[in-house]
Image 1 (cartoon, rainbow, N blue to C red):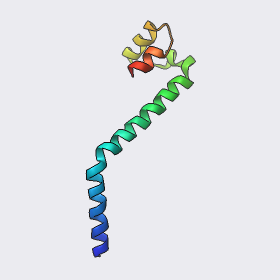
Image 2 (cartoon, rainbow, N blue to C red):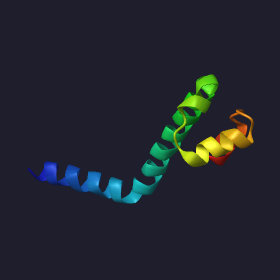
Image 3 (cartoon, rainbow, N blue to C red):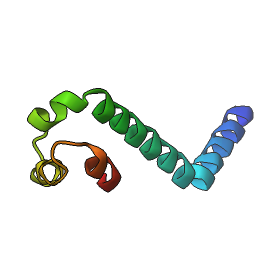
Image 4 (cartoon, rainbow, N blue to C red):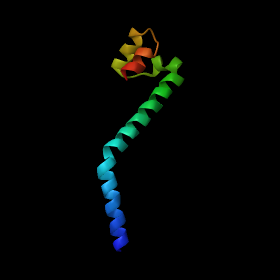
Length: 72
């Protein structure tokens, strides 16, 4: 019973200490995956993008994804 409480306290301390770093790591991983998908589907992104700002960036860049990725 006591060991369970100690483990729980250690886990809570770890999360309280490193929650920001863990959340930034997750956000970075999702952003990198999103950028990979944009690069992989470059030919279809112009027709698939629904965000008006994203469509405008693609239009400004003549369908090239460079400005789109740098802005994201």
